[in-house]
Image 1 (cartoon, rainbow, N blue to C red):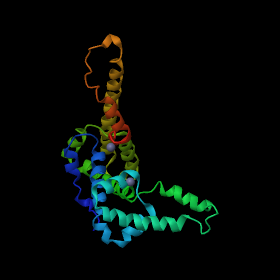
Image 2: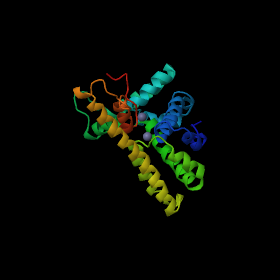
Image 3: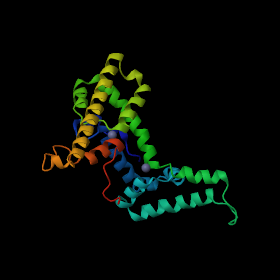
Image 4: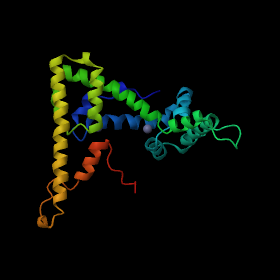
Amino acid sequence: MKPNICTIPITDLFSETDGCPICRMHRMLEEQYVEYITGAAMMAPDVRIITNKTGFCHRHFSMMVNNGPRLSNALLLQTHIDEQRKLVFPKKPDEPASKQNIAAIAELGKTCYVCDRIDHDVLHLLRTVYTQFAQDPEFRRQFAKQDYICLNHYSLIMTASQGNKKAMDKRKWSEFYEAVNTLSKKYMDTLYDDVTHFTTMYDYRNQGGDYKNSKDSIERAINFLTSYPVDPNLK
Ligand SMILES: [Zn+2]
Ligand SMILES: [Zn+2]
């Protein structure tokens, strides 16, 4: 049984205001798919056919290994390695692989079953966000109260809105764009000011001065720009 994205409550997601709401949506889907892939999906041969082909990105392999049963991970890897081995390597060991096969290896580095599912589901859930925004004044208030919309999700929300024009009338779309622009711009301005303030604290004339909100501005800026918090394990 695949995680059911309909059970992801959009209004609950937006009732929180910590960080970017689409990052929260992404994280929720990510946790569900990682649990699914090393759990219930082990009984779904059709899913394995796809994962043998696409594999996983480093982030999702790491989450699967850190959260899922080791046997599930080993079984997934066993058939994935086997398929890739058959697909890419030439029969004669003293010949290089064909251009096509080398391209297939490069392509494998760009595909991930979990990322693909999340991308698909986020687009589906965004349609609900647009509809909810059009219909529910309380949701519009919650939307405006968000901390920010991160840069990647700003672009995603704007791009996806083009394919969902029917979700609301022109006036509501203007209201929506203004709300999104305000959230992203306001936070970006704050980040700029905080990072700038942080740099001025290294001026000897400001010694002993007040850092204000700038101490974690580097971490917050990276989170805003990349959609992920700084990973303390990467050294
Ligand atoms: Zn985001
Ligand atoms: Zn991934």
